[in-house]
Length: 586
Image (cartoon, rainbow, N blue to C red; front, side):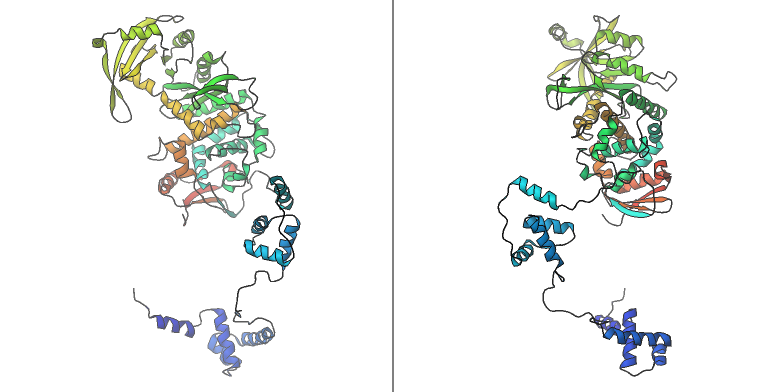
C-alpha cells in the first residue's frame, strides 16, 4: 500500500471541499470577498443562482445572531457546570428533603447529572446550608425514601411483537427455544392442566418458571435482579417476567394431581424419543424447611450431614440420558417404603407405550423385603444394597480367600479390579431365593448387593449399580444450580410444583447440552457459564427475531448447532422466524 505524504494530506484538507458547510463557506467568501456575482459563484461551486441568493440572504440574517454561523467560539477557562442555575436549585431542593451530600450525589446520578462531592458541598455552602447533624440508620432510610423518584414498573403482559431493538444479559437463554420446540415440550405445557388467566396463558406461566430455573436465579424474591430483563421476558412470550408475588400466587392454584399429569405427558415425550433405557435409578432427597416445622418429620440431609425438619422427595433418573422422569415431595415416613411401587404404577400407566424399563436400582432403606417380592412378581429386576448386620459381616469374614473372584469393572478411565463372592439365600418376606453378591475393594467395608437377576454377570451387576450414584450427582446439581433446597426463596412456592419445574428445567438443560458436541455430559453450571450466560442484542423485524450473541470462546459450537437446525419459529412468539448470529463485540 502506497504511503501518503502527511503534508499533501493537510493541503488536501484545505483545498478540497470536504463537507456541505465547508462548500457553503467558500461560496459565500467568493461572493462577498472576491467579488464574484451570483452566476459565477453558482457555476464554480455547483449551486443554482436562486440557491446562491438564498444563502447570501440567510447569511446576513445569521450575522445578527449571537453565535458564529460557521465557527464555534472558544471560551477560555473551565466550562460552567450549571448555565442557568437549575442544578443548584435541584441540589438545594434535595437538601431541604434532609438528604446528605452522598445521597444527593446518588439522586443526581439517577437524573443523569454528574457532580463531585466537592461541587455539591460548595453549592450548599454558597447557599448558606450547614452540615447535617448525625442521624441514625432509620432516619437516613426515612429521608431517602421520601426523596426517591419512583418509576412505574411495567406489568407483565403477553407480547405483541413489533419492530424494535433491545439488549439482554441472558441472550443465551433464547438459544434453548429450539430444544423446547424440537421435543414438543411447548405442546405438553399447553395440554397440561395447569392454571391460566386471560392475560397469561399456561405456556407463558410455565416458561416464566423455567426461565428463572435455567438462569440460575438463587432467590425469586430478588425480582429487581431479573424481572426487567427483556430477554427473559421474550423467552416466555412476555414483555417482562412477572414480579415475585405472582409466582407465589400462581403456585397456590397447583395441585399434586396436576404435577403428576404433566410429568406423565413429559414421560410420553421421553419414551417417543427413546430417551428412557432399561434402568431407572431412584433415591430420596431432603428439602429443609425453615418455618414452623411442627407438621414436618425429621429427615436426613446429606448436604448438611444431619437430620432436620424437612420434606422428603423421591426422584427417578435414567442413567443413560440423564433424564429425570419422576419426582414426588409428598412422601411421608409411613409411605416411603411404597414409593417404588408408586413409581412403577406411574411408569406403566399406559401399557401400550414404549415401556422399556426392566431394572430398578435404589438404596437399601428405599423399601422392604415384602415390596421387593412385589417388584419381582411384576417381572421387574432390581439391584439394591442390603444393610449390614453383625451376623452377616461375620459370615462374609468367614469366606475363604480362594473363593473370592477377581472382577474387572469398567469406569470412566479404564477398569478397576474388585473381589466378589456370590451366593443365594432366603429373605424374610421374599418368596424364593435371592442373589447375594459381596464386593471387597481395598480397605473399604464389603458392599452387599442383592438382586433378583440370576443371569447378569458379576461385572455387569457391579457396573449397573455403581451408576446409581449418578442420581446423587443429579440431586447435588439440583441443590447447587436449580436451588432445590432453597425452593421457597423468600416467597411461598408449593414445594411439589417447584420440584416439577426443577425437573422440567433439568431435562431441558440435558437435551440442550446433548445436542452440543463435546458438552453432552457437562454439569448445568458449566452449560450456563459457557452458553446461557451470554449477553447480546435482540432485533425484532417484520416477521423475524434476530438474536446477536456477544463473542465467547464457546460460541462457535453453539452457532454451528443452531445453524444446523435451520429456521425455527415459536407459536408463543407470533410464529416469527428466529435466527441467531454473532455480535461484532465481545
